[in-house]
Image (cartoon, rainbow, N blue to C red):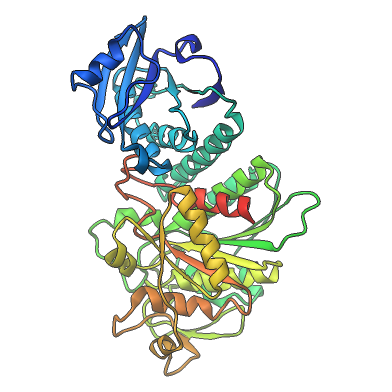
Length: 469
């Protein structure tokens, strides 16, 4: 979708559909022949959030949408309202949509909500037509909002890129295919290690997960550094298990098809890194993505196996379906080896976080209060919520192993998300570290603008975090 801004009045833009927001108890700012205000006065157009009405005035089609109470309005409500407009506009066959930016509001939510809601994954649909697709979005405002519109469009486009990766089937999006997507990013340096290099580097945890699959694992390292920037090197780490069967500890067949989404953290890191480079943000960044499959074969790791991670820590495998933390253990160490001075990892790590938060919040854990606050605030600005949960030395008792330094699972099924984070903490050294468990928010999260399939969750948080660093 092409996105632009203008100071022209909406009817002058050539858009076939114009979106106008309605606040509760407020009049229409720019009426057209009394028609738009007439809809409000008649009660057909309402100020309640997402309430829609359609009218024709002055030779243009208008979609009026409720924005709720003015005092409660924020970027998230703008996203929700914009998603409602985008859905109705597609039904109406809109090609060019113009949003009339309400006075004293920012364009970010309106742009992101529209671009995200208009997304469809159609790669494998037999009909390749573009019926119902919005081709262009124009934001009309009294002042120049071009910079904010461009940033919002870039962030939403990056999230949609991550969604394309998430939604792709696992037979297409193999670890090698994901590495190829990283190599195609402009403005960055990319280094990819295969199975032999991973083993030679002593990354026994990631190598063990990968050994059950014929697909070559890929340890993807992406570097971006803006000129003349002296701040700390950010380390973004993403789990990219492109298909997770659970291994010997096999998952239930029900919804196993959704395990193609187990690479969502890696997709977010890849897409966000590309956007950060495209935007030229003033930051130094090293992104590490651990891409592999977790399958069953005669070579698969087994419960009871003992692995040695890159740091030298030994790990007893109690459950082969707790593979994500094994991949991340070596990826976190690799990020530190490559100079990361602030760490943030994203992973669809535990079902327990879905039980705790549903689809509303990601779980946030970390070793540094200031860094965790920065991550949480970046997510708040991006409309991607997280809630911090505790780490405590007593949880170390739950991941103690009889035969190795630590175990990769807790057989007592206590504090599942916390003990997974406590496990990861062992591989971060003294570097400030935060972990986002996005198992409940990464896909099928039910948001009005990302209701089905991959949601691209985390992309906008990573971009905002880079902007603020």
